[in-house]
Length: 141
Image (tube, rainbow, N blue to C red; front, side, top):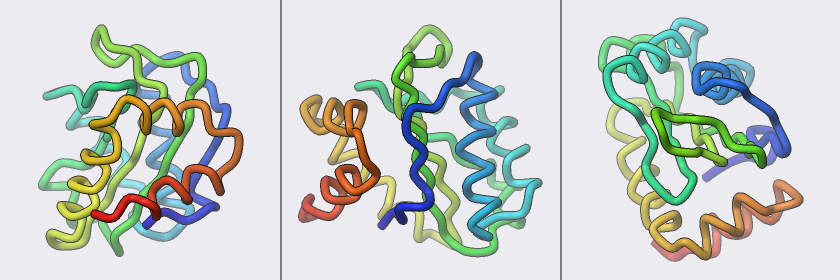
């Protein structure tokens, strides 16, 4: 579901825009999206916050941004100091790009994992990418 090289631990971001750019750049670097997709992620944040609760934000592009998606991808940025997402503190920023409707299944699985505060805490406090991957793969969804 998520690759080790798409997980960045102990990052810092002073604004939600900076956090979204970090998550988006990972998607660009892995070849999942064109750089324009990151702009569409930022555009979506201007319209509606992607903060989901339990310290999680899931920035993703607008419908117009879908033309910049090359293949489905997922990135995870851990921000131990947190970043303000419109009055809510995000400590995990998960960037998502979906080809077609593939991202809907990913979103559902992530929502289930993060609906339990205990799982959210495990990801927030993880000291390695392997710990996060193990948690994602252990959830039988």
